Length: 151
Ligand SMILES: [Zn+2]
Figure 1: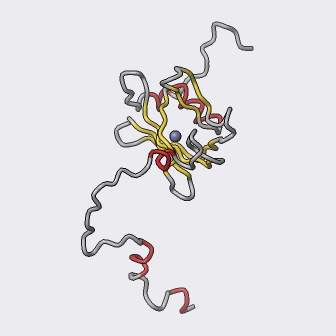
Figure 2: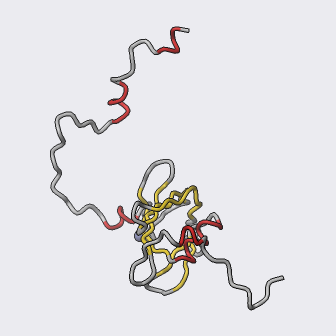
Figure 3: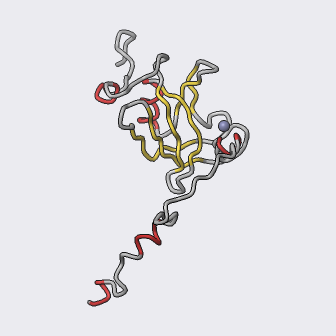
């Protein structure tokens, strides 16, 4: 059915209209492991890369260095299986939650931030009431006798 005069598939205009692209037509895409919360890497997407990512179940980026589309894992086998894609408040960043197979970084580490390494920031003191364990924090609000145990 398809003829050369038909337009190729394009990104949903309702989504495209919300994107705030940089001067190169790109938005940043933060990629996160869906269950562990690991921040795996940062890539860049144009409208077509986002369209493919939203429809193919695999993450596609625009490679700024090679100037071509790059579907993660096609050469390395380290594929990213899409779980969800969200747009941030002002439309200039995407959060792509995936199941990462193997290493996200081309250097072989699980995440690109392991590969880059810690920069030794000064660690700020936390407020006295801050808890780093939110599950422990909420557990203090649970009555010693849970309601369902009364039944
Ligand atoms: Zn990397």
